[in-house]
Image 1 (cartoon, rainbow, N blue to C red):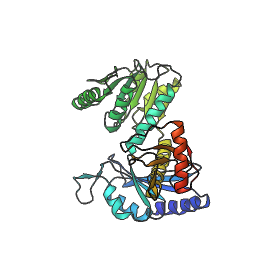
Image 2 (image 1 turned 30 degrees about the horizontal axis):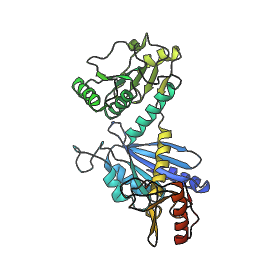
Image 3 (image 1 turned 180 degrees about the vertical axis):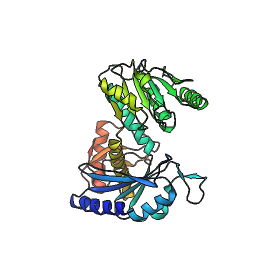
Image 4 (image 1 turned 135 degrees about the vertical axis):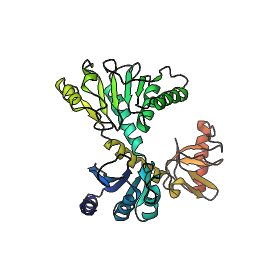
Length: 352
């Protein structure tokens, strides 16, 4: 924990000096390694600095939470159940409970690390085929390792029109996953997901190859001998490509993308800050006698007035009908309504 204390000391000074928000991500993983936890790199942009730790049991999460609490603005805790319990080594728990018991000073929020990885993967794939008029439509995608991440990616890709193939050593599960996705996909989606019974000997027919497994050497050099140069390779699981496969792709100047989820973390922090501000009680609604102003994004009561900012309003966006819609007004009615409200609460409105 000495390294954590040193890092915290230097980063808190930097954040204060540069007037930046400081965030800490407390993650957990079921991947077994010969250590109790590891730190993630420090990342920053013009507004935010964040770093974190990934733990393998809830007792370590508890210790780290105690140390970090009060020294950062936000602590984000991974809510997926992955790690062993400190009280029962045979029980799998999430670290949310111990974090909530220990964190009293910093703002505590939750996140799902896998979902951030999924967002980053989808964004990268769409960027790669941005100049293709059909996008992912008609593309053939194979996903190795159909767990939480692989399953959700497959659903997203098939919804985009891609023909998606799943390979997992447990073929019973991969078949069930494919059936489930084909059941829940939109009715208008013609593309389907297929579960492969055997690991393909060649990947030459696939446009996108995604490895999202905890298996090393999941993709070998023999599978990529005849690969198309335009194929997209993504190593989500990290370490899924054999050394010979990497060498062969490098020789052909074909890149393997190792997923960088940094942008997703920044986006998630910004979204959290926005949500905190948007739905804070003081920004939610404000009453002036019988006149009630409300923010966008809530179902107002009948005759509530939706404005741009309940604390310092300048624009009216509409009048609630009490059922989630707006009362329809002509331009003359809007003009007369603004005059009436100005007299009641003495605020200079315009009706958008």
